[in-house]
Structure formats: structure tokens, C-alpha cells
Amino acid sequence: MAASRQIPGTTLFDGAQARKGYALNKMCFSFNDAANRAAFQADEDGYCSRYGLTEPQRAAIKARNVLQLIAAGGNVYYLAKFAGIFGLDVQDLGAQQTGLTKDQFKAKLLAAGRH
Amino acid sequence: MANLIGGITTSHVPAIGRAIARNLQADEYFKPFFDGFPPIHDWLATAQPDVAVVIYNDHGLNFFLDKMPTFAVGAAPEYRNADEGWGIPVVPPFQGEQGLSWHLIESLIGEDFDLTTCQEMLVDHAFTLPMALLWPGSEAWPVKVVPVCVNTVQFPLPSAARVYRLGQAIGRAIRSWDADQRVVVVGTGGLSHQLDGERAGFINKDFDLKFMDSLLSDPAWATKYSITDLVELTGTQGVELLMWLATRGALGDAVRQVHRNYHIPISNTAAGTLALECR
Image (cartoon, rainbow over all chains, first blue to last red):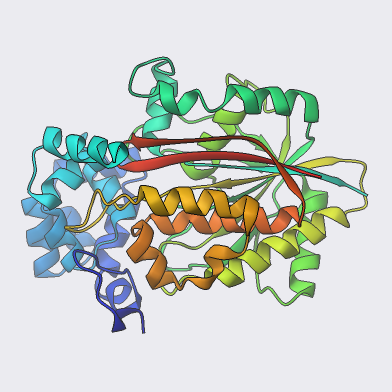
């Protein structure tokens, strides 16, 4: 249903994504807790194993690659908690996904207000 | 009976929390957004609400995908904020208005809205930041609260038309609450923005302005759009305008604009604020 119409550059987080991404999103949800963020940083592989991440999810986590994380079922609200571990905000995520520098991404947003 | 005095809708971007924590309200980047609030503070000082019904969407603090309610209503004596993982300061707890919570629950389920009821509930930035914008510097919040959470995480989302009807039912419930209390509805989120995918950074100023106008001239206008239409028109997170629609639905036919503000960008978001008074 939700997938019947494609919006370019957009993945609707529907049942198929929620099912595919469950382990990844559950791990990212755990990063609400500072002790869990520290445990991840102390042993990334072990932490990913504990949550049962799939190979594509582990690879995307290792690469810190947002588009790959989304393709692997990640939801941006949970992924933001993963990004938070590295002090990255949603403009860093936006820049990475659009292939821009953060300054270019910010300039694009400013331009949206000018027209 | 309770008096529904009006509604306020505003964006809830995490960067607002960072700006408040660092006292950057007068900073060049943030000022055009924060400048939207003093006229609303003046109105609140006169209108003196006792209770705020806050319609918002949780971003993975209280709810996870293990259980994802479409509509959830808080019925707790107290609501706490907590660490969301990316470091904005936690705000003081909010006192719940349990009498209105249960009246809302009974009224809404009586009108066939199937709710999840929450006697324990953490509230995230989508709840806390609008409160901090409306009542800045509060050590103890001057109003009691009832949180109403709408799922915008996992599709399918409730349609715009249904959320508008939910808002209408919330309005009827507030007006039939047998208490000498003044109630304001707060709706949080939006306006156009998209955080995820190659389309990240999408903003639609024309649509946002038309939408804000419609809340005065033709309040149900946006209910003609499907959720997929709204994602296309406003971005994946722009669908948070559902909270604005619910708020507008609650207010009834006749409203007066107290104030409005619109500024691009705060972080990735077209930041809007609108205050309406019931007539």
C-alpha cells in the first residue's frame, strides 16, 4: 500500500522496513541510555552481535553510512541516537545523504527560505 | 464546564533545545524563530490557562517498535523527560491533570477512537521544547498537562482526515469536562522538512504558507491529502503537520489569530508557530 507510489530519495518506514530493521532499530533505541552508548563504544562488534544485527546492518554501522542504514531497515529517529554517539546532528546526516558538505547543505536550506 | 481558550502550534526541532541551553535566543540564526513567541507569552499571561493538552509525536523515547500505538493518551500523575541520546538537557517534570486525562479517554473511546492509555510515560523533545518555548525559564511549569501522542514513526500513519476528527473529538471532550479550568491545546511538529534519504533537506515554503492560511480560512483543507501526498508535499517529517490539524480541529469553527511566525531554516526544518484564540 504505502510502497505503491515512489517518492524519489524517500523510503517510507512501512511494515516491510520495520520488519527488516527491527534488530538495528532496537540497538539504536538502546542508545537512549548513556551506559549502552559507552558499551557500544567499548566493543562495537560485541554490541552488534548482542542485538543480532544482520550482515548488511553491521556493515552499515561500521561504515557510519546513513543511506545504507536506511536500506537495511533503519528509521531515522533511532539512527539519530546512533549518530549522537559521535556528536553528529541531523545536518551532518543530511549532508552525508545528499553528498554535500555540511556548509553546502546548510546553504541549500537557507536558499529554501529565500525564494 | 471547562473553558477551551485556544491553541498554539509550533515546531519542536532539537536545535531549539540546544539554543535554549546555550542562551542563543538572540543569536542571528535563532532570533527570527524565537521572536515569534513574545506576543504569545503576552496572550498566555492574559489567558491564564490551567491545563495544556499537548498533541505531539514521540521520536523513540517512550515508544519503540515493539509496541507502536497510533494514538496514545497520558493518564499519569507526572511526566518526565529523559536522555534521548543526542544530548539536550533534561527539563523539570510535568504535573499531569489526571481528571482531564480520564475524561478525554472516556470521551474519545466513546466516540470510537481506539486509544492506548499510559499511566507511565516519558515525554520527549516534541513535548518538552514547545513547553519551554511557551513558558520559558520555568522551574515549575505553570500548567498541568495531558499528553496525546500520534504515531508518525511507522507507516501506515493515521490519515489527516482522521487526525482532524480526533482533534474535533478532543475539543468536544475538553468542553464537556466538568471542571472550572481553562485549557489550551498545544500541537507540535512540522512544518515541511525531511531528515532521511537523498531528499534530505526538502522544504516547501509555498505549501507551508498555504497550510497556515488554511487553518484560519478553511481549516479542513489539508485533510483532502493522503499521507503519501503529504510526505511528497512536506517531507517525511513534514507529516507532523498532523498535530497542527488535530489542534485546529479541537478549537471549533470560530477562531481569531493571536500571532503567527514562519522562518526557514532552523536546522533542517521550516519552523512555524501559530497561536489561535477560540471566539
